[in-house]
Structures are given as C-alpha cells and as structure tokens.
Amino acid sequence: MSYQNILHSINILVTSFTVPSNPKVQEEERRMSSQKDKQMFSNPYFIECYYTPKTKEQKEKELRAHQEYKEEIASLPLQQSLQQRPLRLYKGFWFHEIILPGILSLHHHLHPTPSDIFLATFPKSGTTWLKALAFAIGTRNPYALLSRHPHDCSPFIEGFFSGPRLPDLDVLPSPRQFATHIPYSVLPNSVRDSPCRIIYLCREPKDTLVSTYHYSKGMHRPEAAPQPMPLPEAMELFCKGLSMYGPVWEHQLEYWQESQSQPDKVLFLKYEDMKADPEANVRRMAEFMGRPFSVEEEMNGMVGEIVRLCSFEKLSQLEVNKVGVRGKEFGLAIKNSSFFRNGKVGDWREHLTEQMAEKLDAITQAKLYQSGLTYSNS
Ligand code: PAP
Image (cartoon, rainbow, N blue to C red; front, side):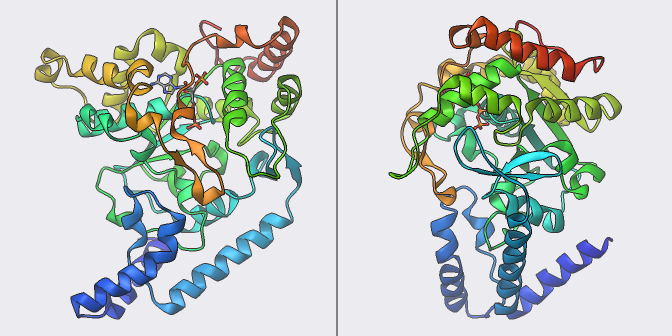
C-alpha cells in the first residue's frame, strides 16, 4: 500500500469517527457541509462526491492546499488564450488558470483503481461523442442518453478537483469513467503507473481549430468581456499553442507514442476513422474496456443501436442536449447545445483560406514527422 493510499485510508477512518451517530444530525451535517459546494458543483449526477462529511481540520487543510496551488500558479508564465481567458504555461502546455488548481490537486489526491477508464481528448476533438459511446458501452444502456447529456456521463476530472473542497470519488459506481483534457506527460503518476486504461480520441488539427473557434464564439461572455477575435488571429494563437491545453500537436503525439509503446494502456482512436466506421471502433472500445460484445448482443444489434443513439444526428436533436447551460463553476454559461455544431469531417474547408490551411498543414507535417501519426480524410 502506498504512502498516499495509507493517508487516504486514515482520512476515511478519521472521517468515519467524526460523523455524528444520529441520522438526522448526520443528514443536517451533510446538507450544511455540501451547501456551498452544491452551488459550485451543481451537477446532480456527481454531487454525491461532495457529500462525504469532513472534519474542520480536513476542510482547513484542503483550503490551505488550494491557496498554495493558486500561489504556485500565479508565478507561471501568463498569456491570453484564443478564448480570451488567462492561460498559464505548466510543464510545456497552456492551461486555463482556473483549471490548474485541479491539475495540481490531482497529483496528490487521485488514486485510480485498475477498472477506471479515462477518456482523454484535446478540447473539441469529439469528447462529447466519446463520453456518450463509453457510457453506452459501459452500461449497455444507450437509452439513458435520451435524457442525459453526454457530459453528465463522466466527470471532467481536473474540473472536479479545481475547487477548494476535494471530491470523494469512492462514491461513484464502478467501473468509473472519467474525462480529461490533460496531456499524457502532465497526468498524475498515479494514472500513468496504475493499470487503469485510457482511451484517447484524436482529431485532425484544422477541424479542431475550426470547432474550437466556433465554440469560443458561442460561449456566454460576462458583460465586460471582449468580443471573440477574428479567425485568422485565433489561428495564430492556436499555432503557438495558445488555446486550452495547447499545443494540439504535442498533446496528440504524447498519447500516440504511449499507445504505440503501451497498447494495453492507451487506445488511440481518430475522429475521422470513427465517422467512417463507427461500428468497428465501438467494438474496439468495448474490447479495450474489457466489455466485448457477446454473440447474443451482436445478434440483437446492440452495436448498431449504440452507434445510432450516440450519433451526432440523434444526440443533437434531443431536448436534453438542446436546452440549458453548464460551466457555472468556472464562471461560464456554456449552452448544452454548443457541444453539437455539425460534427463533420473536413468542415475546415468552409472556414479556412488556402493559405491558412497550408500553414497549419506545414506545422502538422513538421511536428508529426516520422511519428507514424497521420490523419485520414483531411
Ligand atoms: P469538448 O472538448 O468541449 O467537450 P468536443 O465534444 O470535443 O468538446 O467537441 C465538440 C465537437 O464534437 C463539435 O464538432 P464541430 O464543431 O466540428 O461540429 C461537435 O459537433 C462534435 N460532436 C458532438 N457530438 C458528436 C457526435 N455524436 N458525433 C460526432 N461529432 C460530435
């Protein structure tokens, strides 16, 4: 048992000794202690993680650690992102300032189990789709997606840890699925070294840029915030890596290389391939997740049903994905519908000039040179 695991167990023990025995008092304590966090982490599917009672000392310790992370972050190089929010350079990648405490915290507090699945992506590469598919495969209940936004299927792990109160992941049903945009080299050692598995979905950079640009344009802005910048300017920043979790090329390459050296650890999928043959890729995902489809499921058309229910055409038309907003905990009001634009391969042709496309392609070629990573249908 590692030192961290022992500490974790002690925490649980301390917690269990300090819980009042009267169920009514206990319930009141739970309600009170989670009240503040409820406002911050309003997602009803994961709110349970913030219900675990904590001692005053524990809360103070968590708050102190959070302050220390913020002080450390304040000393990191600062730039504006193409989303016009502050970015900090950490271990060679640019992160939104508000997310970094979560990443630092994960390094101390995330203890994956062997059955955990991490769904990793560079933003706007198909995260929403991947979440829906992994959930449907894991639960074998794609119909739950009729009333559940894909982003409510797996918590975004660095966002989950970005507040001053630590979530208790033990309350989540096993096998757990988490989503992350963290580059491989910045993942906590506990994730890289444990037998948990990672599914990475990669998307061709020109389409990723265009999707990023439209998404940031559609983001609700506080009154005083500046208007979105023109696409050519946004592209310049994207090329310099100045977008969330950028640069995109290094992000993709790291996971690609890991998938080559550790195929049992990292499954590397491509958005374009998934669009071309979703069924084959759903089967690959299921096998990798340790949940291959049985002969009976194949005969019953389960794979086709998952593909259909998770398709852009289906998900984008569901009421649950058309109304409401999320991201309150980050001071945002992101429309649930903004995760569904058009879901096309090669949409960059409608938005980038020939010169812009050539510039991006030249960078891609140079960065991926001799890596073996290529994009189809771009
Ligand atoms: P995130 O990283 O902020 O969670 P993410 O889901 O990765 O966003 O990106 C959204 C893109 O995935 C959008 O692409 P577009 O802008 O080029 O249209 C969105 O349309 C696409 N997308 C969402 N759901 C699906 C789906 N079921 N199938 C295919 N593409 C999808």
